[in-house]
Length: 337
Image 1 (cartoon, one colour):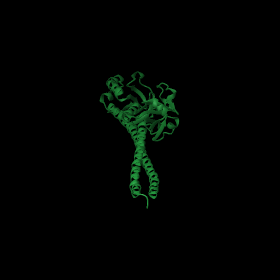
Image 2 (tube, rainbow, N blue to C red):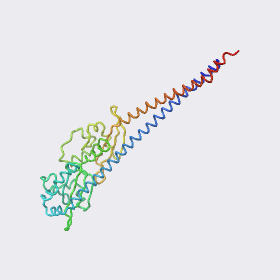
Image 3 (cartoon, rainbow, N blue to C red):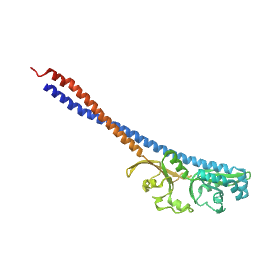
Image 4 (cartoon, helix red, strand yellow):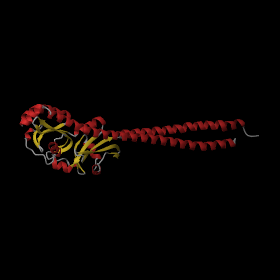
């Protein structure tokens, strides 16, 4: 009987540690697998947001070019532009453009003559004709010079816009050009509504100071590392995330995961390029990823609980087997004679 009990103890000393080890490996494997899945979800969410920003920027450029094309092909507008009749153009376009401004973020509508002389600003006709913007509006200069429509991003006196410029021509030939400017905030708001990411646009401060002279001076906190925040869906969140190093390194799409003050964030940086393809800033998008942390914590608790259940079940089975194989037979046989 002593031999049987000794053998049962040896079995237990061997099986229980092995069971604990296997349960630990199982829990670790489950946690690691779940963590990999969650990290993959974060990366996919960030990639989808980056693609959304890039596609929506292109979509807004196309929208600006399309709206400009409609205007320049209206016969009545061609006639009025050829005749230099600003009031006639304004009467025909202003009601529709007020709707475009309020509903679709169209902030600018301007007729220009070569090289880049303002003829009529639809939203501010009191500025009058004759304003020469050729020193900083290369997109307009090139359009009027080469007689080719253009679309892209450019800074003007009223700030940065997503622009589309088209030519106004009639039977007599070229008259001038017309441009549409759409707010970058349109992209940021679309981003927030579609993906849940808060976003902000940051533009080179030297360029903004030199060109966007009609804008008021921004708060000091809105200038970070030589870049000015021109639009944001939630500045309070962005200002805790954005750093000079982040903005100065934004030469390509970057995705980062950060933990700040106990909160997990997914961070996305998309370079902002002008119509020539030169980097002039970036769009920064941020999403709180605490839901993923909660999911990971729940997965850890579940894995550990399952491992402990495994230990209890296996230990129970082993104890029953030891009793059946060693203890009960020894008890039945009694002491040797």
